[in-house]
Image 1: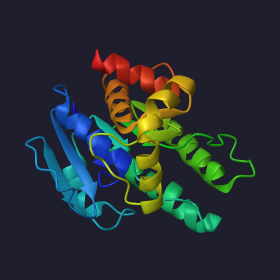
Image 2: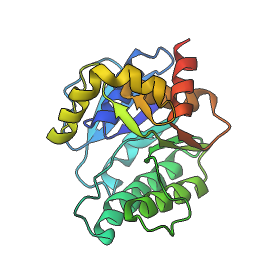
Image 3: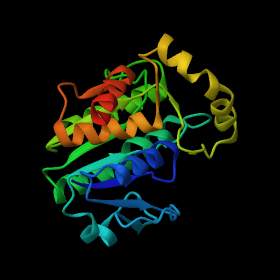
Image 4: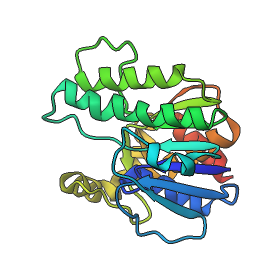
Length: 225
């Protein structure tokens, strides 16, 4: 399997990249990003690109892939709905529309969020926008598309959030995570498990198109066995 990853400089995307490197069934990984990841591995190639709304310049590099793990995302805090929609809905679909044209047999995995509003009519702005993004992706003619709604994600394998306040939270909760996992299996997961679950659905599919934390954790366990 050949995989494209968007957002590998972020916490979730980096976790997915590390799992792809370790997975024997992943032959190669193309990382699309604005800056280098700093990871050197025989499997990994990087396409540095600045305009995430137009992929004309790198289209030739995007063909021939079996899966895309789309891990780009921004916080909606302090942002107008129009701007957040542009940086979430428009940005994601720009990539998806290019990829489905070049790779119609591709599986597309999108990192959404717990509480996403599939009706697109709720009161919470970010949830409506994420819901609209999910709905459009599920309508596209990919081989399969999966929406990941992981809830709380604990970074593993030395991964750190670029947002200081988030990293402080992750550091403070790291010792407590095993207890949280037992008490709230529907709401918590790890970067390792999200990466493994993406690989699992890309390789084997899954009956659900929307995956909650429990689904992610179960898939990760199956992929590890």
